[in-house]
Amino acid sequence: MSNLWFLNGIRKGIVTEKFPKTPPEDPPAWPSMLSGAGDARCPVDAIDGNGWNMDKCIFCRRCTPAYSPTGNQDIFTVESEAPIFHRSLYIYPLDSGSCGGCNVELMNIFAPHYDANRLGLFITNSPRHADAILVMGVFTEGMEDPLRLAYEAMPDPKIVIALGSCAISGGIIGDPALDISKYNVRIAGCPPSPYTIIKALIAAKGV
Amino acid sequence: MKYYSFGEPSGRFIGYSQGFKVYATTIARQYTDMRQPEKKAVPQGEFYFGYGPSTGGMIESVGVDLLTPGELITEAYVNPSYKQRNVTIRGRTIGDASLIVERINAFHCAAHSIAFASAVEDALGFDLPDGIAHTRIIALELERIRSNLLVIERMCQPAGFGVPANQLAILREEATRIVSRATGHRYFFSSISPGCSMMNLSGVGNAVRKISSTFSRIYDDLLESKVFMSRLINNGKVSIDSLIGPAARASGQARDARIDSATLPYSRFGFTPVLHETSDAFARFQVRSEEILQSAGIVSDALNGASNTGKMEKLEGDGEGAARVESPQGDLFYYVKVENSIVRDIVMVSPSSSNIAAFTQSMKGNIFTDFHFNWESFGIWISEAGVVLQ
Image (cartoon, rainbow over all chains, first blue to last red; front, side, top):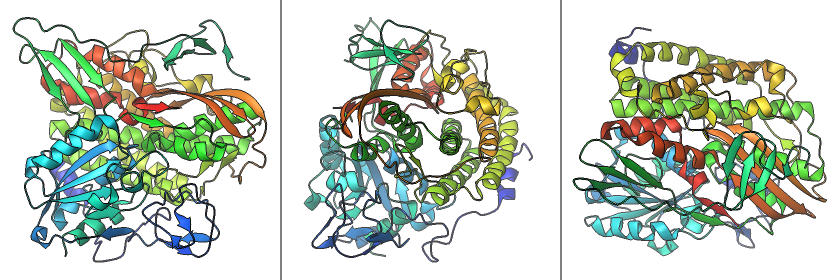
């Protein structure tokens, strides 16, 4: 390998997948959409008489074989689209009390395999420049004020995104970072894969 | 407890929780004040520069206060408690406790799960079959490869070194996909629990060899980059007694739970720790890099004889157990007390707490632009340092 890094980069070629135009090349089995029916053991009550609730699920496999993973990464809910951001969506990530899994997967969507910048998705380090605040982890007292202050500092219009089961429902760790009604977008998974995050953020833009 | 006992300090210091100090073979009941140290009064001409808790430069929420007259840093304080999670494990079944332990720090799930599972197995008198021990070594070393790749990638980023940072991100994603194909989950969730390891190891050897050979070339090129090296050399020198993990090995101290391990047969693979002497970010970079190559070799060796097992049949009984593994950041210790498959007590000593103490020492005398290189070189994870197990 040459010490000229620019040439090194060129020689490596393109590793970015065509996703979401084409299906994911290497989706994980867990987490993904579950198929199955009936009651099953669940430590977080994600399965009850009404079936499976992706928002609560921590994808721990206790419910197998009654439920099994399909590999389908579309485990998210968009309550209200924001087409005003269809060209670009600037996201301010806020770690309320995560285990680090959601943080790393969010970082991964900008790595070469996924390259979310090509899809008009960007991270900003200031809430003043953000279109969306993306909340990760459970509620913690110490991060309550930073979360509120960051939200208030954002210009309108703005959207609130929950990333992962902890932010949505508290998972198996604690209480959700915000009440579920405050989220415009809920991305399920523990942690959600980069495929799920990208697809959800694009759907949030109404594209 | 087969490998630990309560008593006077004996052997090297591993770490502490609020009620205990853990040494190589003993657990001493000693109170440790876990509150944040009081900040030094501000001398004339200096001020505190606050960084965090929510900032784009860090992966997790953490508060850092740097005392400075403008450029030189004279004191540093790290507050990991902004995102402190109070997590209830006592009173839960072993199975539910395993699910929580996995989520203390997802990026090092294998280390946490294996340390916890080993402590439970010790408590219940379960002898780990050789095949599962090999599988667990593979899991730990795969996780070390991925973790060290992230550390080096994050050290390249503040230098604006985009090409190697992205090439390392490619390797890290490939390592993650190896884990995903082997366990069904990108971070080992629900694949390791007491008495159990479930990994499909076909194709792992070749895939890890590919990562190793590509990384070896990137490492050689990074070592030739004087601009990059100059950001690391003499940055964050520290050689206090309580160093653990890569930080200790970067100051020439052969401290590694893999040498001491009674349950995982690392000695079978001729394991000796990677050592460097200069105690700075550069030495930590060298240790982390060479450990990637070493871990790839261990994975190859451990594949012979590795096997899987289903769930542990009987998780019943009473007892106390303790175990320690070498997570990518250093010694990770768990103590559990089990009654009738219910966890009655649990203590976790995280390597990130020790590394935070080392980091704050190492920042004295540095300048602002050193901060990110030095922080990343310790591989600190706030999620494991700022969690309270109840």
